[in-house]
Length: 326
Ligand code: SAM
Ligand code: SF4
Image (tube, rainbow, N blue to C red; front, side):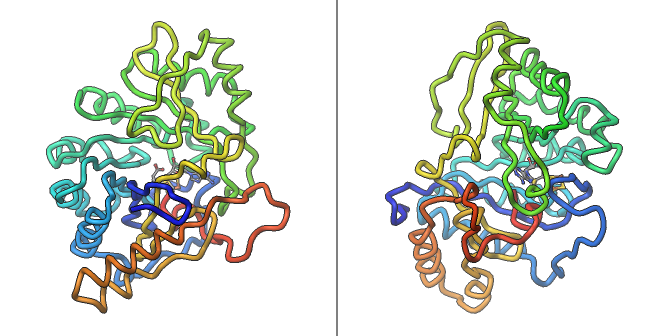
């Protein structure tokens, strides 16, 4: 599926819920979040039907996200159902990791190819401060268990803020020294509560990491590396990655689209504009009409974000990241 700017779109991130058990300061308000009624959430069957259409249009990689995807009861069977579809080569999951241990073996048996665990610090008190919950030990235990599954590609995602200390950064990097996983630093985007926080940029993190651990050696991009750029450090089992939408715009190579938990197809994070696939899906019994609508939506994908613009574009995304599906 090629869009109007000749980008090959083959990766979809699907949000399966707007609910979450944590309240990360840059993502979800501590009080007053309003959630979708159950009838507005796509069912498993609807998600699988849409994935079948996406696969026929060329999507090869599906990432399940949220909200917190592991608060959805049927997550293991959903992963298995998507993984069995013809054309889908890779199914991965992004999670805060709190409920991961109890689902890990089921997810692996269902064919999950990779897990990204969001973890902004290794310090339990800071974890509580950032997420609102005292769950660091559960997440760390899940991480340790997940790295035992050799077939599972593991990544740790950190969104460093200006109050994230140098020690917090270097401790997280240390995870890639002794484990075969990628520790990735993601620049905060001015979406939802993210607008209220200042973040650490890639350049300063690179200086800090190099100073502590030695040279960062660029790794060649892989088929699945997307916008992340990866580096190795001599003596490390894993790698370090950066996803820097703010300081290194990657819109020209963007290969992704998103499906919200209530069935809106979003082709760029910054814009609210999205195609209401749920209505089409619930009206049309014929997949070809659905595929035509999706193809049109993808073709129209905007050329890129304008997060740095002083005047925000019209129809800018007003929702929290947890509602969009980060
Ligand atoms: N609950 C799951 C988790 O935390 O991994 C999945 C959903 S969460 C919205 C997905 C990712 O989005 C997390 O890694 C989170 O840190 C990131 N995120 C949330 N708000 C962000 C923002 N404004 N800019 C960049 N990343 C953000
Ligand atoms: Fe929940 Fe993930 Fe948002 Fe944190 S980043 S509040 S874990 S959805």
